[in-house]
Amino acid sequence: MSAARRIGDAWRRAGQRIDRLDARLLLEHVCGCSHADLIAHPEREMTPAQLARFDELLARREAGEPLAYLVGSAFFHGLEFAVSPAVLIPRPDTEVLVEQALARARRLTSPRLLDLGTGSGIVAIVLARLCPSAVLTAVDVSAPALAVARANAARHDAPVRFLEGDWYAPLGDERFDLIVSNPPYVAAGDPHLRQNGLPFEPRDALTDGLAGGDGLACIRIIIAGAHRHLSPGGELLIEHGYDQAVQVRELLDAAGFSDVGSWRDGAAIERVSGGRLS
Ligand SMILES: C[S@@+](CC[C@H](N)C(=O)[O-])C[C@H]1O[C@@H](n2cnc3c(N)ncnc32)[C@H](O)[C@@H]1O
Image: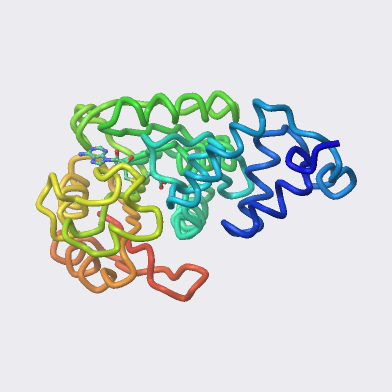
C-alpha cells in the first residue's frame, strides 16, 4: 500500500500546510467520506483523481481561498446552503437579523416579508421555513447570485419569490409588513477588503462602492425607499458594520421611523438596527 495515497497520511501532511479541520473537510469533500471513515480507516487509498483534486484544493486553500467556495457549501442557522463565488459566504453575524425578523414575523398573520440583497438566499429561506405563514419576496441585483438562491430555495423546499433588480426597483408599488436587509456596508477603501479571504468574495456584495463608497450608501437607499414599500406599522431591519449602529439609528430617526433600536450579535456588537413606520 502506498503511503503517498493513504487518506490518513494525506490528512496529516495537509494539516502541516493548512488548518487541520479545513484539511479534514477538504478530504471528506474530495473522497466522499465522513469524519468517522477518516478515523476508522486511515489506511484507505485515494484514487489518483482524488489525490490530484485534493492537491489542487489544498493549494487554493493555502493561497487564502475560503473553504466554503472550495467545497461549494456553508452552514447557516443549521441548514447547508450551496455557495459559489457569485455570493457572499453566510456569516454567523447574520443570525441576529434572522432572529429579530422571526420574532416580528411570528406576531403577524400571513406577514409579507421582503429580503433586499438576498445573495445565496439564506435569510429569506430560513424565514420561509421557520415562519410558514409568511409570504417571502427576495431581491438581488446579481443574476448569478439569484441562481444560487433559487437552487437553495428548491433544496430546502422554501417558497420564496425571487426578483432581479436594483433594491426596490422590481417591486412596483408593492408593500410589505417587514423589510430585512444585509446590504453591502464595507466602505470601498476599507483595508479589511484585502484580508481573510475577502478578496475572493464578490466585491459588490461587500462594499457600497457603486452607490457612494462610505459604507452607508446602500443603507441610505434602503431607508429612503422604505416609505414607499412598508405597510402602515411595518418595520425595517438592517444588518450593518460593527461601528455603524449610531449612524444607522440617526438615519432611521431622520427618516421618521419610530421605536428605533439596535440589537447585538453573539459577540455583543450592535449588528442590526431598525424601526417602525406609522
Ligand atoms: C452582504 S451581501 C448579503 C447576502 C445575503 N443576504 C447574506 O446575508 O448572506 C449583499 C447582497 O446585496 C446585493 N446587492 C448589492 N447591490 C444591490 C442592489 N443595488 N440591489 C439589490 N441587491 C444588491 C449583492 O449582490 C449581495 O448579494
